[in-house]
Length: 115
Length: 112
Image (cartoon, rainbow over all chains, first blue to last red; front, side, top):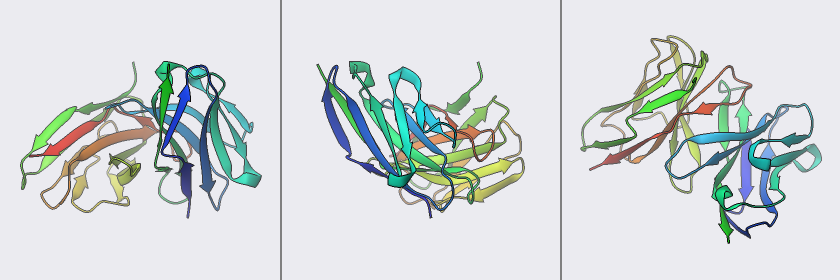
């Protein structure tokens, strides 16, 4: 069965500091991986996706993630945090082999950015 | 602009009542999904549909029902059998099972 684990339910960084949000996955088939961002009382917005092409994936708003098969990881990074990055972030893997492409989500990581 | 529209944004329900949440998409996507979000639990799949007139139960389908009579529409009914319906409900769609999902803005349902 596929699963996603996000390490750290809350991460706090200073404005201008590096953002690192951790995600590890478990999958019996080549994974399709995604990072989404959610602002309060809103839907989820796709940040980036990995679909077996380049292992370093660039997304919107300066975020990027690196797929490491040996570590079963897909950590999200941003070199310099901005106040507007404060939100909840979800890592997800697609269960395309079984349940029609349903997304299996991690528990989410709430990112706080201090001035 | 293409997208997914959920309505209403906020919904209040009395215990014992059924309520229906609307989800409409104009992205021409075949697959549609309903997720439930509770604090600290991430998102869990309620129902999904890969094609018109066909849908399957997700992980937490008890107390919910759906229909898929049109490609653009995938309404969710929260029935009185759902014992703890207060949550944030998100509808999503995707081109197919291997592509990313696009989400609506959600409906917050509260039982009063």
